[in-house]
Length: 227
Image (cartoon, rainbow, N blue to C red; front, top):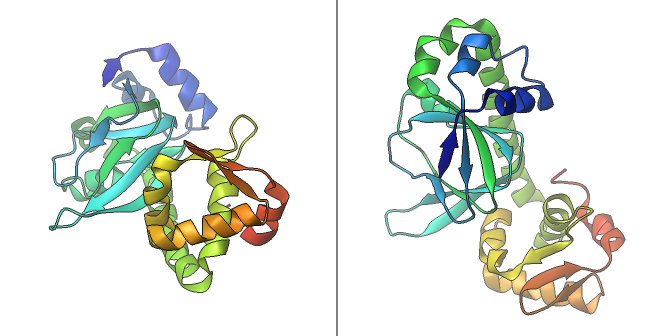
């Protein structure tokens, strides 16, 4: 992890994500920019959390580890996201492990500074309240999706909402186990769905990637549940 103090970049990201009204000058002066490379752990389940992180670039994987050592993917997050907010408010250790799955940039502010300054600012507290409320809503929505929709719909929606953009319409095959965990199915079942999608001409499987060939068909199946 690389950490730098760069006020110009801090202000750029704050303006980019519309945080001007929530993060005051004093809090900004303590912010650093932390850069993580793919595969680096940002925080580890059970460890003391030192910073609240504002995810401004890149993708992260959030997972929990059972006492038997098994990992379960909780979420894959893209900007903008705040990480460590619940732990900071409750003053508890990190509830999940967070891993960078691309180059990731975070604005970081120490928990101590937030306790001393941020909790005295109603605008900053409103930001945290909005973020925490949205997380609980999304968690409830995800549970409903896994109960109400078949795996075909969940996988198609995941492909169109998370994977496909103008630059890249592919899912790396190394991510398939994580994808299965995230959409609530087994790797074996997901492989059957992939085979069916290939036969229908919607995707193609190479040695390294699952490539989207017919996004319109996927969208028709997806029902927009992850958007």
